[in-house]
View 1: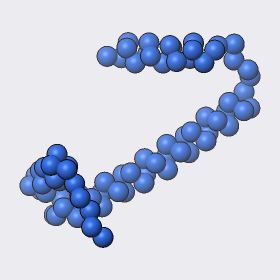
View 2: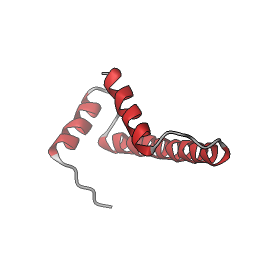
View 3: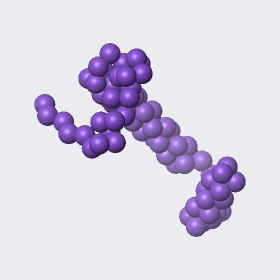
View 4: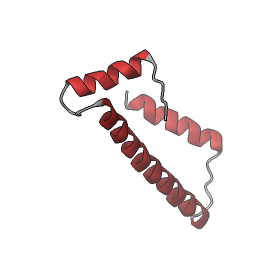
Length: 79
């Protein structure tokens, strides 16, 4: 398998190896793939759970626009 990285990614990988956190570049990549798999699995499961709650829950009086504005406001408040 042949993989290409941009300069920023190469620098990050090199820094991880130089820091002593990983023995070589291959282990940095393997760790990244493990984290990606874990994140993706949990994100999809969380999404499925939320969809299930939506199907089983009461009908909301809020519009999609209201929900989006609420999320934007929460993000703004956390900054």
